[in-house]
Image (cartoon, rainbow, N blue to C red; front, top):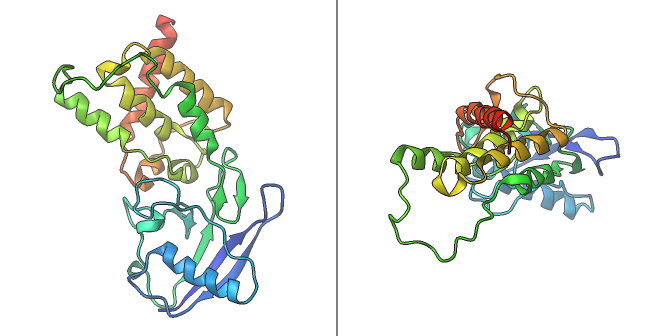
Length: 248
């Protein structure tokens, strides 16, 4: 199959960017999207041109490194799928695709399709941990966790921090990401001692990073590759309000 690609090329965060047209020829439908870009990049290298820069690592949809906009949709047209797990069989021969980086003030462009998502790391560092000395792993069942709470915590912990929620939100909000990180610790017994402090610290850091406010548009949930539910945002607001009223 043959495709036309319009790719955002930008040297760095301060340089102006522009869309550049490329042709992707003889693409195997069983390739992943990133494998297709590897073919395009090899052609550029063979011609002595600069290859397209993009983030990637595991290529298994679990690390959260990859991610960019494909025709205006974060991670492309398939639900619950990262770019590295998106296969070319979902497109048609002759399709014209527009590839752009995540668009957010808090995610400055590093180069081309790669952006700096270290703002997420700073949100986690602000409170996404348990500081008590836990020692060795306890015996199974020694700390009782209700099944419902365990399942909700695991669902929230599935967040891979790819940034699609921010990129797709019209406000550039990181509420889904932050809500997931607050939820997966705050729902468990081990996370209770610092629950209030965690909620305050992570929400404050999220605001400092320049992310927008959530207005419940729901685009974040729609494009999340791990299908994180928007309920984590409500839980984040509830924990924050409770912590603010009670005090540390």
